[in-house]
Length: 460
Figure 1 (spheres, rainbow, N blue to C red):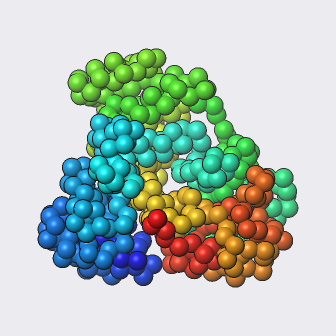
Figure 2 (figure 1 turned 60 degrees about the vertical axis):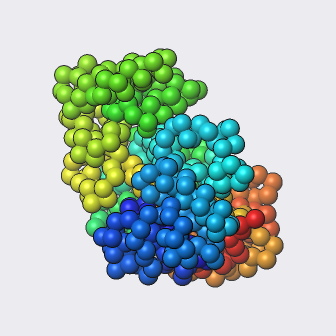
Figure 3 (figure 1 turned 135 degrees about the vertical axis):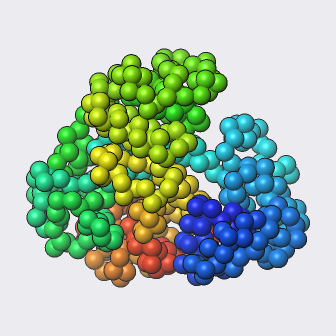
C-alpha cells in the first residue's frame, strides 16, 4: 500500500513508524526540513519538504498513484485543503484528516465532508479521542490504561501490581483454574524497566509488573479486585483545565447515568466563562490549577479523582502532584511528551493519557479498514490489540485456538461468537466464520496476525 503522511510531528511520525514497519510504501511530507530528516533517518520512509497542500509537493510525494493520504499537520485548514487537492487533482481513493476546531467537527452532521463538498473520508478529532480516554480512566479508576472493545462488551485494562497483590508468584495457568468463571486473560506484561511481551501459561507475575488484562465489561471490577485493587465508586471529580478536552469530559459526566459531582478549574477567564455558560450542574472556578488555596476550595481532599488536562504537560504533572499531596485518591494527567511518562511513578501520579497514542490508535483503526473494527496501540507503539471479524477465507476459520499457528508475540484476548455470546478463549475454543476475535500482537507480529485474519485494506 502506498501512503502519504502529511505532517511529521509526533502523530505523523508514529503512523509512519507503524506503516513502514509493515512494509508499506510511506512518504512523509512536512514544511519543517528537520522533522522530515528525523523521519527519513530513523524510519524506512521517503521524505518531501514543502507545504502539503501544494499540488506540486503532493505530486513529488507520489500522489498520482497513492492509495491513501493521512493529513495530520498542526493546521485544520491545511489538512482540509490537502484532502481536497488529493481528491480533485490526484483522485487519491482514501483521505483521513485530523481536525481540532469544534466548529469543523460540528459540520460533520451537515454533510460538509461528502465527496461533492469537502472530500474527507474519515475525520479524526484528538480532543474527542482524549476526552473519551479520560472518561474510560475515570470509570476504571485503578487502571493506568483502558480501552473498550466489541461494542462495549469487553475492555482491556492496564494494572500495576503491588506487593499486596494476592496472586503474585502464581502461574497464569493456575489463575485460570482458580478463577474458572472469570472472563479475563492477561495478554501482555511489562517488567520494571523492561519491554512488553505476551506471557506464556507458565509465566508468573511479580510486584512492580504492569499487565494488560482483556476482560468482559461485567468482570472489570472483579478482575481489579483479584489483582489487588480496591474498587471505589467515583462520586466527586475535579477537572483542572476547562479547554476543549476538559469541557468535553465535564459534559459527558453531566450526561452520565451515574450521579457524579464535577468541578472545573480554568485559568483563562474567557474559557472559564464559556465553560460556566455551557455546563449546567458543574461548578467552574476561575484560577490557577497550581494554586493550593484554589485546590482546597475545589475540595480535592474529598475528590475521588483529579483529572489534569490543560495544554501544558508540566502544569498537568504538578497539579496532579499537588492534588495528591492534598489528599486526592486518584490523579490522572494529560501528557503529550512521551519522555515525561517515566516520571509518573516517582511523582506518584496514578495514570496518564497520551493524546498521541489515542490519535494513532484511531487512525490505525481506519487504515486497517477491511474487517478490522478496533485497533489500540499499547505502550510506546510496542504492541496492538486488534479486534476483527473472522472471514470465510481466514486460516483460523473452523480451527481450535490450540491448532492455529499464531506468532510467538500474539495472544487471543477474547472471542465474541456470532450469536452474541462472549467466550474466554481456551485451547479448545473453536473460531468460526463471523466470530469477532480480539488479539494482542507485538508490533513486529501485526502483519502475520492480519494475514491470519485475512484482513485486506478496502477502499470502496
